[in-house]
Amino acid sequence: MTKSVINLPPQDAFHFLQKNPQAVLIDVRSEMEFLFVGHPKEALTIPWRDDPDWEINPDFLCRVRRATSLNRPVLLICRSGHRSLEAGQYLQANGFSAVYNVAHGFEGDLNDQHRRSSLNGWRFDGLPWEQI
Image 1 (cartoon, rainbow, N blue to C red):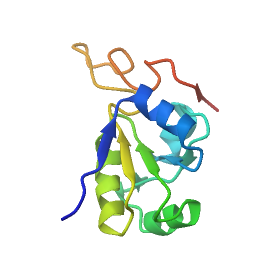
Image 2 (cartoon, one colour):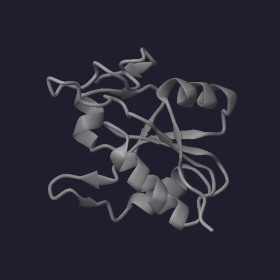
Image 3 (cartoon, rainbow, N blue to C red):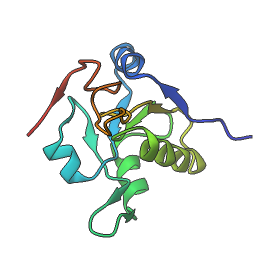
Image 4 (tube, rainbow, N blue to C red):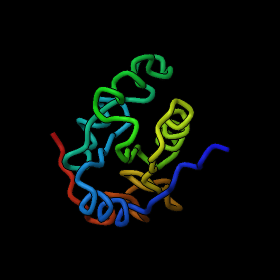
């Protein structure tokens, strides 16, 4: 039986990273999102889907394996938590045992005006992030 990807609210994910220095935080958004929207400090960028066709990155698994190991905790984050959850399920199906998804992602859910970063998410919670 396959274990489910564990969803952690951003604050819990941040505390998990602090308590588990061997854990790796991977931002699975596109490289443009990572650079221009901002990203959690210390996050690696390994896009799950990327420009120009938004197809699954054929190098995703290989790049994650190089950045971590099957036994190190892997936390995944995207814009809202959906792509990272899909990527986490893929990693679990390929042997990763400790996979976590940052619920609500970096920018969070849409509010009534269809804007992000106003309800929840890593940036909304005031967690460390940077923009290049």
